[in-house]
Amino acid sequence: MLKLYNTLSRKKEVFKPRNPPGVTMYVCGPTVYGPGHVGHAKTYVAFDIIRRYLEYKDFKVRYIMNITDIHDDIFKAMKRERVSLLVLTNKYTNLFLKEQRLLGIKKADVYPRVTNNIKEIIDFVKTLIKKGFGYQQADSIYFDVSKFKDYGRLSRIKIEKAITGTRVETDKYEKKEATDFALWKGKKPGEPFWPSPWGKGRPGWHIECSVMSQKHLGKQIDVHGGAKDLIFPHHENEIAQSEAATGKKPFVKYWIHSGLLTINGQKMSKSLGNYIEITQALKDWPARVMRLFVANSHYRSPQDWTKKTLSQAQKEIKRIDEFINKLNDVEHADRKLKTKKITENLIPQTKKAFEREMDNDFNTPKALAVVFRLVNRGNALIDKEKIAPADARDILGFLREIDKVFGFIFWGKEKISKIPSFVQKLIEEREQARQKKDWKLADKIRKKIKKAGFLIEDTREGPKIKKL
Image (cartoon, rainbow, N blue to C red; front, side, top):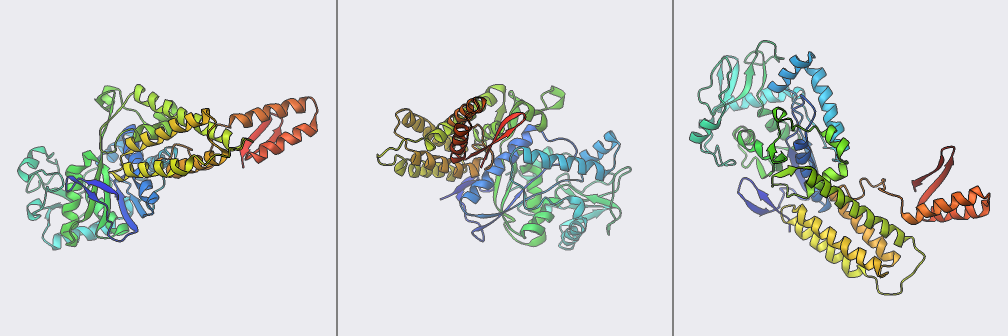
């Protein structure tokens, strides 16, 4: 029975989507004004693993991640780079999608962009005004927080305290109260703008997620995710404007938030010189290592990016690779054990333990511990020659199954991390036979290599091998 921690209730709840096996899931995406950093990588990989596990449990997940392409930071970057809004946001949207691919993150079903949803946003704001939640100040529209009685239930922040923790916007036209937030902002000099019933302007930040989640997932959704720093004010404001507009409560059934990333114990900041872009990190650490690094920490926990923690993840990847190579060797070995299959009990027990940990709020560290117990047990059995080819095949099959969740064990279904040692030995023996012009023996070895699942091709640069 899958349970997850709901930020809204502050407790673990049994997961019951509204229309099983369907699951509607929305995760806040990037603001595209620059390259992504490793904090983004942690968040997106964590939610990728969560999504993958829901699919592993046979849920049909519709996964939406928005692209924020209208924002103050974008306007600053436009001036800095001296380019148009479209040129800048296309550049960094494409980079974001490339970063997702490099990290092995499954594609979202839709990546909606704010600029493609201006009409829907204007209609949503009109609804809030009509229902008495929105008010106009010159060309800007604000949400009247005092009219929404449940404001603060996600963050547990009372309005009086929220006032002191809210940055008062320096718009030309002031809000009634500091906690009120912009639904539509009047045009400012040098900023892109769109026509609206209230004058030229552009959407506020929070409104986009309410509009685009409703457009692609409906008025009520099952899961909404994001990093913990979005709880207030962004997600709090999403709840207020969504439920005020639709009258549907709750807007989101399960709110899940990922912990933040520090760099060597410090908050990541360009001023501190510890700002690490994803593309730079991937030059130092393979994506497989980064995915395992993220899985080594519970998604809700803070995590520290250090050379030590990344090196540890790299060592763990190596242990897995070595184990898989041993299993490949056993699977294709000639020896046949007549003993009862070891995996008849080992695999079901391991799978049950893996699912038990993942069902407990996606506890990846403990689920990984289950995997490494299997590695240790398997290595010991291999050393004692107690694993038959069929056993090795079963274990490899199980690892492929759970790698649909983790995405780093085999690093893609078609990819192999290393040619099994026995195949490598056959390649060397074949080369020796060819040098001696023993074509009959060379052909015989080629057939053995093919039987092992590999195809060898002779080229000017030497033999090349690929997985069949």
